[in-house]
Amino acid sequence: MAHGYDLRRAIEEMTEGIVVVDPGGMYRLLRQLELEGVVASAWTEGAFGPQRREYRLTAAGWELLVHWGEDLARRERAFRSVSTAIRRSLGRMEQEENGAVLETGPDPRGKADV
Image 1 (tube, one colour):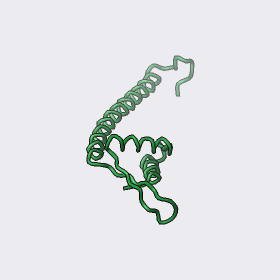
Image 2 (tube, rainbow, N blue to C red; image 1 turned 90 degrees about the vertical axis):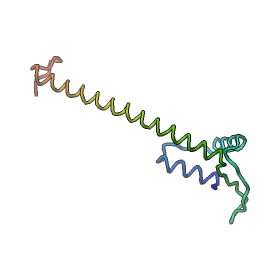
Image 3 (cartoon, rainbow, N blue to C red; image 1 turned 180 degrees about the horizontal axis):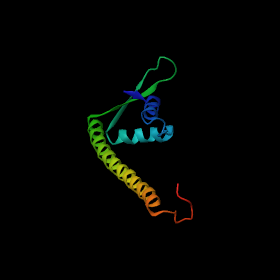
Image 4 (cartoon, rainbow, N blue to C red; image 1 turned 90 degrees about the horizontal axis):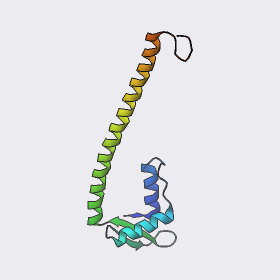
């Protein structure tokens, strides 16, 4: 179980600040997830200050989380493949450019060989 503030902070820490959660949007999403049955909440007494709502995943929420994790892993592999292909292409282009300048003599742009 976690409070909304703790969830926001955890998301920002896990994403190294890339994802900054809008508090209002997060609570609207938590309410929607509760209506869908993937999150449950309960009011708890705070040691200091007013009561706070704690959230936890239901069994359906855990199942959704597993599927989401699998989907993210597939997407991560796809992004990694694309990123690797781009780096290889850029490396080949750089080699071709450097090789063409060294092999063909003067730079076609009018610059002297180095």
